[in-house]
Image 1: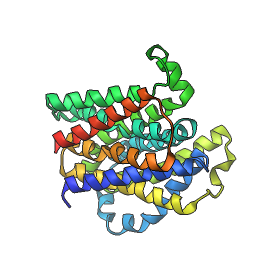
Image 2: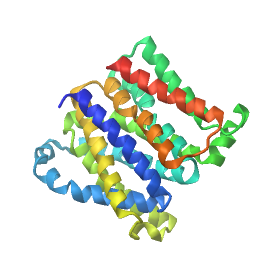
Image 3: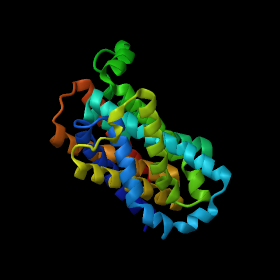
Image 4: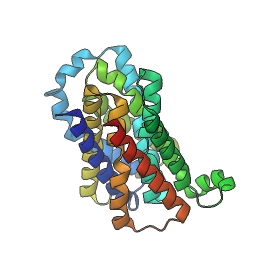
Length: 288
């Protein structure tokens, strides 16, 4: 499969999956959703991991396994932050902010892997970052920090940061191990992470069967499927090109979310959303 095509399918998986997660977040608790989503994905892809992709196990060493598992904590925490943000804040706003992570991934790719972007790409990245800030504001600029805290958008920024770093660094285990296991192993890390957090916070609802299990299965498959396709794409092409294409999912997400959630946002937030989505789409076109 062409890596551009894989990035496009990853885009659709992320966009649809995030909307489904928004629906689930209104009926279930974030830790509960995270635990069950990771468990379902682990079970569904267990057989392929031990058969079709068993050769990747031969490439594992203590060092690259440690890196793989460490960055997997980031992707799972990002998912948890996004779900909390969707509960405490607007689903649309949270999805756009969290889904704008390719801007950070692209910048970090320049730092860690020596990839380059042109002037127009740099301007597109800046537009995404400014749009993300504006979309999170409920009031005046001087009240930005208060706005972030009161609206719960700080969790969306947490997801943005976790995913931005993860998708930049995941190239390391992909090059050393392969493109399947670095994503699949995140399901195991997620199960353990969510159990530990639940034990620390004394949240006993984590093992309770979630509402709308059919949608839970769907979002679990879309989440890990999108990640696996993303990993495949960056194993074949540069992260600075793949990340914007896969990450332009906010453009699809925000259209779907408008019809599903019908949320009210102020003019400043809509300007921010349009700016962020335009920046991501522009980055995708300029990087193709």
